Length: 168
Image (cartoon, one colour):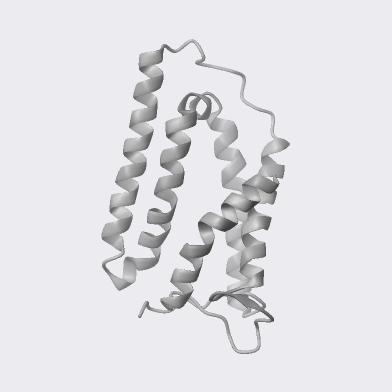
């Protein structure tokens, strides 16, 4: 779990600091106790908490029974290439969205996510497909929960709330 948190923080830190520096979101006066770069310490804690919460939730789900492990090497290679290609397409769409103010944040998310998705599919396509219901539930529930909690914090203007603004 410590390795996953470290990877999440190291990978997400440049992206998050870039978006804050760019003015995509900010923090009200008197709301930040300490910063590392442009981001408040609480933002880094959020990366870690999200990783831990998702891992713990996933660990309590009953895994899908092994399914298509009988697939041949050629099929597994095709699945990997398809997943990596889809991740590449997501990255291209993300780069295209970065060109416009209204879609900049979406573009930043897609561009950030594409390499992670490509790596997961390149390495683990058969396992992801065999356990697709578990993976979907394992990621969707914590993501939905944290999105709702973040939205509530934004609405209330508390702590590490984000104020979306147009990029500079």
